[in-house]
Length: 199
Image 1 (tube, helix red, strand yellow):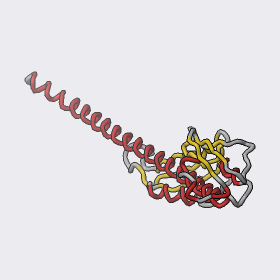
Image 2 (cartoon, one colour):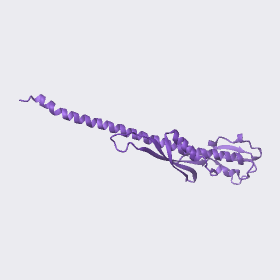
Image 3 (tube, one colour):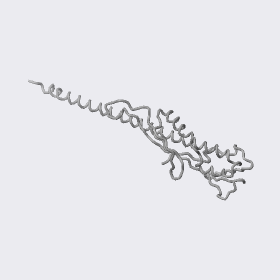
Image 4 (spheres, helix red, strand yellow):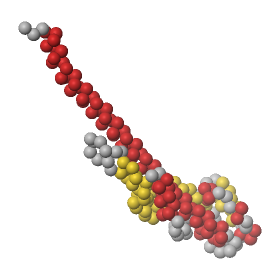
């Protein structure tokens, strides 16, 4: 005759093993999905950094053009509109920042958002979450971001480019005298042009 307590233990053991297996699988799945989320976040950070780097490179080009035009070109005020750059170094700048974030640029497109020029950058990470029993985790993460260059300064449309001009850069007055211009008179690029991610 089988003792009742021993019979209960025999029935409980398979259930315990089964429940332990389910818990271990759930824990593994949670860990893998957390890693996947981390990879996606890393990809988005890389895309953001690459797009901003491209836009900043073109903002630097605008500053170089503006510095060379004041006092020498009667159309120097046009540089403050923020769209006279050629963007020759923007793609390389995006590539460098993507590489620093262990990613590669898969797409680079000059674009405009709300009338402001900028760049859309598509990246792919060089790393994966890693192989596991969860499908798709051995693939690279992808993301994209768009950054724009927005002029921050207003001035009188009737201003004479040969005479002193007062700029209003988001409430900060900037006086530029073409006749006595010194490159040191220009403020930091961030005062004249904002670089930010497009929403």
